[in-house]
Image 1 (tube, rainbow over the protein chains, first blue to last red):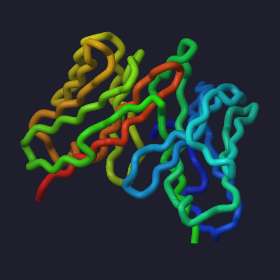
Image 2 (image 1 turned 120 degrees about the vertical axis):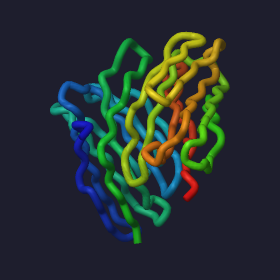
Image 3 (image 1 turned 60 degrees about the vertical axis):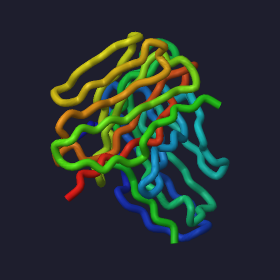
Image 4 (image 1 turned 90 degrees about the vertical axis):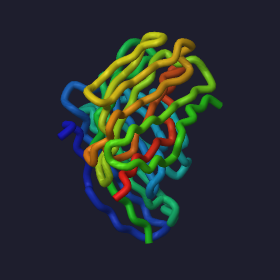
Length: 116
Length: 109
């Protein structure tokens, strides 16, 4: 158990819909990362938040957005869903080190999104 | 853009054979991390390498960071069924963490 929790575990929805994925980081971790992993593919970095502020952005679509709240939990919002958005979405957290450095990331169990 | 190329994409080995995956970066890295993802699981941190030419061992796993800090490798000696999974490298460069595509280790039946 990494200490990172994600809900829900599974989500099935239809094209055009909007969903929200939730992540609670490990206690004390200020940084949260979101990743997308399509079937048997690598990890696509989407976005990073640090203490409520956006820190880095990867290949995140404009239909996707995220935020980190004062209690440090984070939500990833996916809208106008398409079939191709079906994937496993991981959240990870870490203690951010010196400016620009990255410490080990602890991954949650993921949310499996199926768009029909 | 900055890239970390990881090869091979898949490696099929007989149990007891060795396994190696390689990562090459287009830019100099300040450090590199390695993660393992078991089938159906989430990535788990294995190690971080920081120094040029660094070599670290964890039982049957040997991790190396190149002298120029642009490449790294993970070598597993005498693979076991518990080694099955996908191994990812992630390089830290210019305030970004860039992930390799992963190498899937498959044990032949």
